[in-house]
Length: 308
Image (cartoon, rainbow, N blue to C red; front, side, top):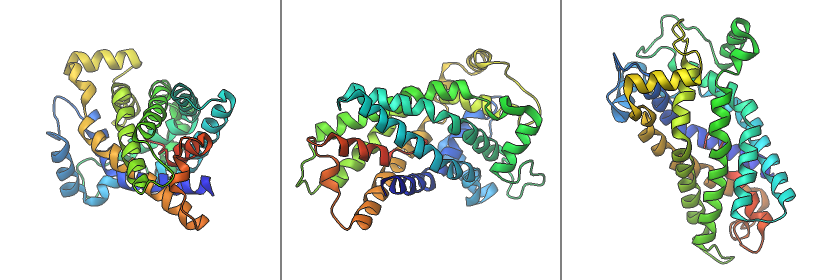
C-alpha cells in the first residue's frame, strides 16, 4: 500500500508541476538570436495564447508512464541502502538518496528525452501542421529506429550527474528539515510541516544541480530541427557559455523553483491522504517520529517525486 500511495502521490506531483516543466524546457533551449519568450510569465502567456492550455501539458505521457517504474526503483534502492547502512543519519540519507538517484536514471533518461522532444514539438502553433511524434512511445520508437540504443539514452551522462547528487541533497535536506521542525507524536501541525519540508527540500535539490539540467535539456533537444549543434557535453557547455555567458545556466530557473514547491507539496499531501484512507488511521505523527527511523525513511520514499 505504501508503494501505491507513493505512485499516486507522484502522479499528483506530475499533474501540478508539468506546465512549469514545459516552460522551463522552452526557456532552456530557445535560440538566443531569435528568442520567442522574454521570461517565465511571458512564456506561460505565449504558450496558452498560441497553443491553448493543452500546450502546457505536451509530453506529460512520458513522465506518467515512467512514474511507476521510477518510484519502484527509488523506493527499493533507498530503503535497502538505508538498511545496509544501518544508522538513520543525515549523511546516510544523502548516500541512500544518491544511490537511488543514480540507479533510476535507467528509466528517467529515456522518459525525459521523450518528454523534452514532445514539449518542443509544435512550438508556437495551436494546431501543429506536421507532427513528428504521435505520443511519447512513438517518439522513443522513432528515435530508436533512427539512432539505436544510444539515441534513446541521449543525455544519460548529464542525467546521472544531475540525479545522483540531486536525490542525495533532497533526502538530506528533507531529513534535516523534519528533524529541526521537531515532529512529535501528538503534533497537530505534522502535515503542514511535512509539506513545508518536502517543498523546501525540492527547491534545495534543484538549486544544487540546475546548471547540469540546462545542459541535459539542450543535449536532449538537439537535433529536433534535423541539425545537431553539439558534439559532446563539453561542446554544449562551451558553445552555450560563449554565445550567452554564464547566465545561461539560470535559464528557466524561476519556473523550476515555482514548480518545485507545489510538486512536492502535492505529492506529500496525496501520499498522506491515501495512506490515511487505506489504513483508516492517523498515519501522520508515526511517520515523522524521531524515535522510529524506519517510518521516517518510509515517508521520504513514499513522497519523493521522480522529477524532484
